[in-house]
Length: 217
Ligand code: GTB
Image 1 (tube, rainbow, N blue to C red):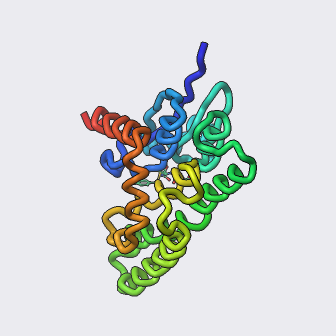
Image 2 (image 1 turned 90 degrees about the horizontal axis):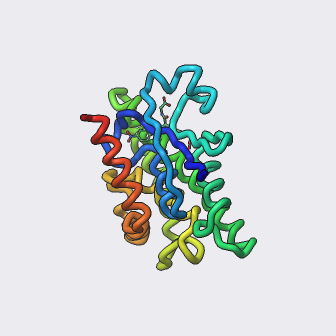
């Protein structure tokens, strides 16, 4: 009997179906490799209950369960999916290592400044120092985008063919949509458009949107 992985996602995502929560990158990776999956919705309250914390020690989504294996960090989940299936990591060992390098760059170098900017927006918006803080966090994000833009240059993807590294970088950059920051870098904006045009992304996006709409009733 085939084992279908089960992931968790927000029961009612605060992104209102825009695919900005981190289950999106897991759905996308599963779609890229053609692996079907099931989604278990979790409420904000249930996320903090002991039952969910046995899966995710920090009480968050997404989690990934497959035949007794439980994972709870999207980097590890996407790397696991990419390692077990063909299509998201190149067969050549060096190219494979470089693709994995980009997964880590997405999570350790680019995502933190994007999240810091969002956190400042949510938590410090009403503070007297917010304008200055906003300038600082924007500068930090723009610094990473400048470096990334320079590296991408005129290429379609960061290192040859589309890989799990591109999936993670593109998913992180998607969170900057609507900020005006990404739009300053034509090649990065095009990179995200190209990533979002992939049939696997489109399927994952439609699935999470339908999921949100069903929950919203
Ligand atoms: N490092 C972990 C990973 O990569 O898996 C981070 C997981 C994480 O931050 N999960 C968030 C969560 O569970 C959801 S994705 N938050 C609830 C909590 O901590 O109590 C972050 C997110 C949430 C909402 C939006 N949005 O509405 O646009 C976007 C991103």
